[in-house]
Amino acid sequence: MNTPTRLAIFALGLTVAFGAAWGVGTAMSPVLDEPVASHDMGASETSHGEAAHLPGGLVVSQDGYALALEETTFRPGTRPLAFTITGPDGHPVTDYDVEHEKQLHLIAVRRDGSGFQHVHPVLDADGTWRIELDLVPGAWRVFADFTPAGGEGLTLGADVTVPGRMTTTRPAPTTIAEVEGGYTVTLTGDLAAGSSSDLTVSVERDGVPVTDLEPYLGAFGHLVALRAGDLAYLHVHPEDSDPGPDVPFVAEVPSAGDFHLYFDFQHDGVVRTAEFFVTASSSAEGEHGDDH
Ligand SMILES: [Cu+2]
Image (tube, helix red, strand yellow):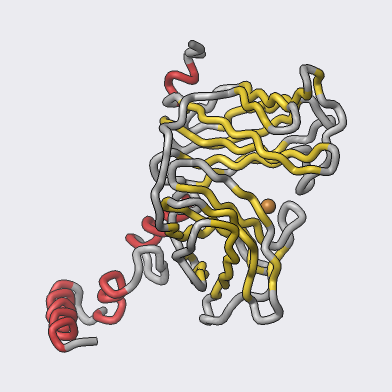
């Protein structure tokens, strides 16, 4: 710590001490700690509550766990990504709970919502995860969705840059996705901010409803929702269902606005992704059944 900073903190400590008797150590901690830290009463309990309600994926470090990428800049192409999750003791985490059949789910997507990849890295004995990503130029976000053994589930996010000439198109609203292999995947149901929204994804192939979807990650499909603008990573829960054509989900979105939805499904031994771009209404609109 340099001298001016130390002086500034000392001065702050004096100010606080005058106001609050001799609770200097405690009084100073909100100044020195990250806002998420909560080993104080009252005010920091509130800030902890707010952090708990923040959508996932917006921070690179939370509750003592941090996502550390070995490299953050890549040339375009198929590139190896390596990273660790460091724990509260500062060492890479090597023990994870299995959620949706995997110890860790990695999502990579370009900031404009294109290039979505949902993959499952391999863990080394030393705690390093490795996977290959297909990268084109642009600003990317990667998300690690995991549960440290015996702990709470976390989604941490970090930025990745791929230099080069970037092309982009503004995504258009779509609830019908054409997917390679002759599939047409349709999303029905409306997202409403602040409430649980029932969504159904229906799969057809060459115009015929698909009734033999294969289990993928413990359900007949896996849905990831990202908020346009900041790529907040949202919770979507699969519901029990038949193996198609309809696969139900419950989604909770924290705000009105645009969302990218990605539905991974397995059929004929191949996992494919259908992409949707939808707008969530404010909850008031949703209650009044505004369907346009
Ligand atoms: Cu996964």
